[in-house]
Image (cartoon, rainbow, N blue to C red; front, side, top):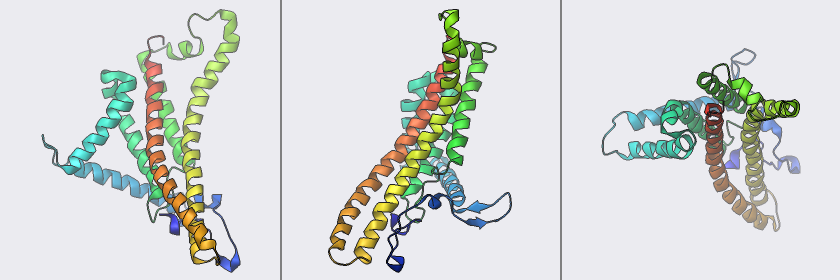
Length: 267
């Protein structure tokens, strides 16, 4: 849990120091001062990529008609994403085409989110803006690519100038369509993921560190208050596990939805 998290509330010199945004900008650990400089969050990201590769390797190295435990868990997770996010938006044919991309998005986002509640890691690898922006760009490029490939020469025209709108109204409609389709979509994808993980980390650190302070450092009746913050901290940890999965689901679902809109016949 977050009892040893960065940004821990400490009783140093009688003080009571809450978590800050400095948690998300840790000092360099490797290659300081070079283009390859890596801090704690970057190392967590690399670790989770390795974990994903190992898990998928273990789950697929001996595929059987009657799956074993590892294969069964992996198949359950893949079927959930395929049926509830990909095929529900794109159908079977197009879903199969975009499944590798959307599967990668879901599991990568989830893996980077869940580190926020992993003891010893204690911070979501997606809570620093670089990763949410990168994933939003991937989604952005994907739906534009899908639209151009399906409707060459017509995608941008039909996106910005919807059919059936009086020509005079294009002065109002076209700027709105441009902003909503090509600006708002990637920005909201990135911000939704970033802010959920950032705020979740701050609340978790505050609750667990407050528990540490009240029980171990404060006197009087404060240990009883520590029991309250412990209860809230435990409940919020469970909630953050749910949010980690939910945000991965929402990000993947919206990416699939944007691709489906780009493939729609009106384009």
